[in-house]
Image 1 (cartoon, one colour):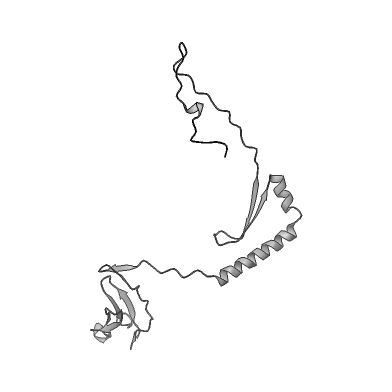
Image 2 (cartoon, rainbow, N blue to C red; image 1 turned 90 degrees about the vertical axis):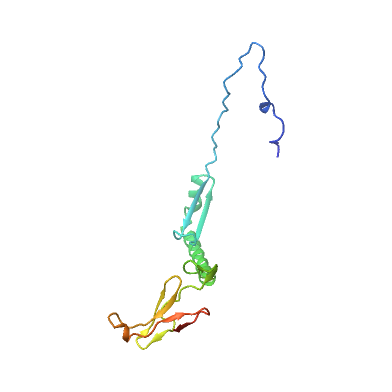
Length: 168
């Protein structure tokens, strides 16, 4: 590195006005030279998500990028097929772990088990029981159709501290 940002430079030192000269002078303007770097990048993407495979072609300029793909349509198509097959291989063989469903619930400063969906094996004479979570309580209710009087419904199963459901 040839530039030392911590060295004392004449421009950074305070200027003292000379006798007879102006105290405040107009700041000088630095000349701006635009960069002549006209690099071009072509991206061929197989989908809209981050998991979609990409093929990227870099060119020194637009003519260079055009020349790289002009006349190589067959090879480019073959390359796209190979990249798609490789991406498919990774996506089918390396599945990410399933994300937990919903937010964890807390009660008494401890994480509670997630709600159990109906059809988890709790049944009664009327069919599959219906799981309900009331926040501080959880229960499996009779699966009788609507309109069946309460006296004919099975008693609810209440969640116990060990996680099982039992009738009171």
